[in-house]
Length: 358
Image (tube, rainbow, N blue to C red; front, side, top):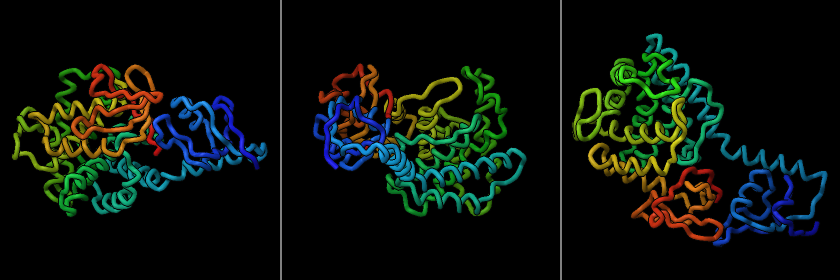
């Protein structure tokens, strides 16, 4: 078969890319041999690629190749997504049973959690979006994501390995007290009233009461359910604890809890940009959150994002090409080959993280 150069506007699903496709800054966008799907065409347009060299077309094979390529892409993360879905399914049952007064089955939870954590390298905190989310199951998915993120942060911050699993378990169970709160409150399309917020605050005590008699878990897991809304300056709840009176697991979980609460869509508000949330966390580290844990979280979450496609606040699409460690939440963005330094152009920010392609 020969090679032809075609305008991106004439690409078809199933076309096979013959030469590596580069951005205008020379970064690899797609490798030679990749089959084109509508997703690739969208990205090529976003980066203003005009022409692509492809293998001469075999009409009969085109659609089959497209489907095979899409299947391969979908399969890449299948093990992690399968384990994630299995963990969600288990936690759905755990939450239901806890609502009826049953103690969570620690051995079953730990076994499923260990199976999921084997694939933690496939979990990208900034770009991960759960599939098959059922109506009314925000709290379950939130708990699983806080679990995974807390586990990552514990590793990044050099916690002893014996603490990694308990911290992940604490993440899974930190919000279980919400099963005792009227579910209608969480499904409201408007902000909570003062009375409703006071009711929600009770979930920390309820959660501690639910898991305090669980066998074979350490005190830090139990205290994380009680203390994850405490703050360094004593402004948190339920006990207004300060500084070293707050368990280290609780301090770590607070960061993951805030991040996912703010970046996931709720009935009363849309998704927030993860980069704006990271900036909010940085502000909160001055007095409310543990500053060393926040710094570790921000540095590690942003350190491997070069090559990530993002949408700016002015609706332009671009690619992260450099993250200054002094200002990790405001990286350099390549937009049609022109560098936008968000540290300099303060009025702009990353509105949406779309995907990572390198």
